[in-house]
Length: 273
Image (tube, rainbow, N blue to C red; front, side, top):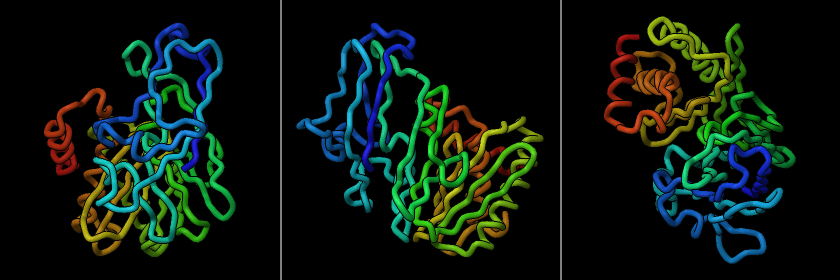
């Protein structure tokens, strides 16, 4: 994926601070930039920028891994290919966190997309996204996106509170419609226990693989399954789907650090709901 990263110092909380750009070692390992990022006109990724005198831009290419053998650490919940040639990825797959004087900053950010002809850009805002804005770069880095061929199955659902976009290259449209119905029911039930989820849109992706697995971001879910998309909550795929959906209420890794705590509470509330 080709990326143009631009920083406007005037928009930063401390324009005179020492700026650095860091890909998350927790997910990618320490050598992600050296192995998977190619910088235009430079030999290697330079993360330490120092104090910027004016607008700054870097053009680079991120090579997304195609399989577990060549993938960075944490690959499963970060990015992987669709069976029809598209890509699912988290924002942090392609943009680093911005630090000022050693502290990660939730600075305003804008993602713009140019996926090319016959390709749709998907986000929690829906299909054919051209731009996504947020008050926090961290929030965008923790959100799912997808570049998918135009023949990818898509379902859009809307209620009074939020919109949902579901996509898959592996299952029939009716299975995605069933997922949308399950999600609507689960959200309504969960809100009785956990409070309002909020009005933001959601992006759900489903992939057929030889494992039952799921991951949630603040803006959506990705799930894999051996026998198709979840059709009932009583199925193993349905229980994974419900578990990942409950994750959407948690505040994220910067607040809940311990995996046992985050996963334990999620299992508890999933059973209750």
